[in-house]
Length: 361
Length: 62
Image (cartoon, rainbow over the protein chains, first blue to last red):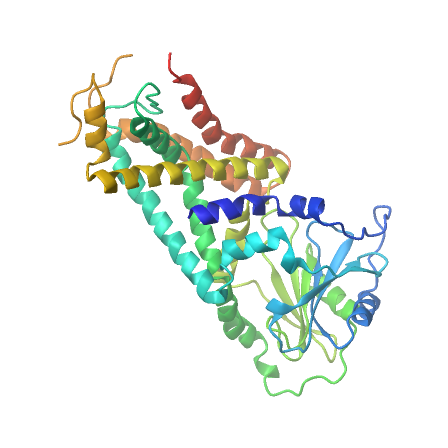
């Protein structure tokens, strides 16, 4: 848990850290209202840089409206985890850069935080750790009651021995942060199931939506990407595209562009809605809201990352994370102390106190 | 300071419950909208952080 809190801390500020540590080509400065580049041209420019690769996804940069990414892999069936991101200028359609992020500090922290470089088993293991942490928090609430029976809220006995002081800090911080640690802990657990949730969607709703195409031959010539995105955006008013999955990738069928649309509030911008565009005719096949289990995943992401309320929220997230580290360290100390001496913390407190009568039975 | 005698569960958990409700509101409000909603979220989530430091400083050795 300590590892997760410590690696999570820099991840709160991953954009800012990347900005400082790594220079990147800046997109052209354009006046507001400049129309987006033609996506077919943008895609052609990107693929010209990556000969021998095929596009998997076209992604609008959440943090920089002037940039887009094309995610490319060696073949359409290759594992997208190993894809290379090509950054493109969203207005001119020009190639910007294609940095290798795998050596970056933030990437290493992210891997340590999400799967410890061990793929899905690593993720599920950390998810299990998260569940244990949630149980620990709840048991902490339960033992908070007997330990505070004679103390008023927020007691910090500063003049006493370390074990008393650290118990007070542990109790105080633990109970103050209980809502936040439970939410961040539990949404973190849900995030570890992301791969499974997406598999469920793929074999559930996506398979349903594309059922009539199952035996259809793979289209030999793809229709315009730009037109497909426009058709999708018109099909669901009030949304903008978030990313496009190309035919044959894990987020689409062999015959469709899957255009994932997002709304414009902090919440609805996370709730992606797929619109499937027939890549042979350019017509809309179907668009549906995501099933509840995907929606749950989408909602739990911002609540874990803390990236939905600007810089002040990120700073608060960091402070809360640091206090959580304090809870873990003091908790570890109290536990080790009891293990080593075989004496419960309550008894140690009772022995160390000169004015209070013994508290434990 | 007068040491309170045995507290009831209600007395023990009243203040923590208020803090938990406030922080939950803070967690949700920034999801609902921008601007004012964000500010509300900052204020609400600052409550547990503020109280933590307040209690530690306040009760420093006399």
